[in-house]
Length: 545
Image 1 (cartoon, rainbow, N blue to C red):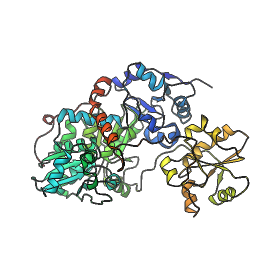
Image 2: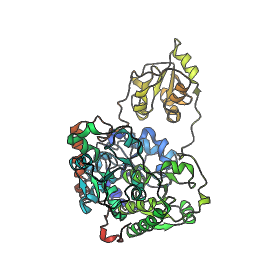
Image 3: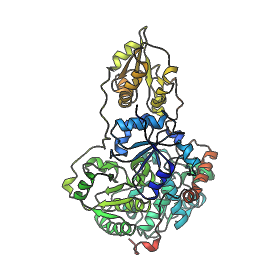
Image 4: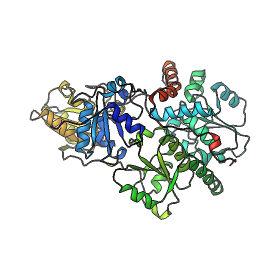
């Protein structure tokens, strides 16, 4: 077996400083990743590599460096690099010494998830000081019936979990386009909120940059601040209030303003012909992203453009554009959302362009984004009905469920064992009961099919290995029972629980999260690889909407 090349701290840092393309991927599970990682090390776990890598690193000859804890031979990083090379990534290397080596060499480690975007948001706050109001101040305005409009910039599903009383859902990229219709009186105060800080800071500043004449403020610390102030019982749940449509007159006015803002940030405009040529270019990665609402995208979109609403793209850039130094092209149908989103990405040091007025006849594809996947290996499949019969026999098989832990908890095939796919190669398989037959499953069977040859190779001739056709979804669709009793050979590390999610986080966890965010600006300064630049109002064109 040929050794996998190593990458050292000096090489990786030089690539970041020189803005050369490089994809740093942390292949540990998300909960471990959140404990500490280099700023631009995007999370892409070994367990789910095939499900995400083609979309997140589209160019097979891009430089890719894998991270784990210590970079040991045959550790997760090396296993991931070997898998990447098998998938066609010819320049996949392992970071020497892993995360421990990065820190030992003087590199800064960032906690939590989406660290680049959150650190940038804190830099915007520290540089521009967009107006903010405390939870107590906002509640007083609402209680006295003041002329205010609260807009919640999170995804609709997040908004439905919990929201400030009376808030209307306007996801981040929609703000400049929708708020003029929601608050037509320039005396109406607009209050922007999210769960924590980043999206409310960026959202409030977006409205200011767009020239909204209304007084604008962020709800300081979002729903976390609201809860810590003792108002958690007032939060609403399951709300469906959403923004309406913008008139053509408003769209035209806003498009001109948004373009001026984006150009001030260094954004360029390109044609579909340019994009077509860039996609064929060797040695250069181009991400093509449609920033509109997913429902609009599904109704009609450009071939090859991925759906990522603009607000989430700014909030979670590392979830989409893993190759730092790559080129990004954004598209919409109104000239507002793509331009405003691009203005932020440019300040985050991305080379970013907006697609200029594509012909409506080019929006030929419909339906949701289809994630590109490697070919599935040819593996034995078993139907739900056959598996149900086996489970009643004397030679009862062992069922291994490698779905997300949240899915497993909601319900699984009776008797199924939860396992992280990456753990199966490092002892988890040996901790399972011995059997003559093993059946792998996940929610849809996709991940189980990729894992099947690995499990079969480890078991060799000791047992048969098959995959539940259609996964646990097909089992449930066949009317077969699910159970919630847990059997685990892996600790559930696949997802980090954000302190701003749900309604049951402790006050201590929320305060710790806010303290972490406050310290990000100093971490950016110590790290020194980000190239972020925050434009001041003097850099943007003047005038109201």
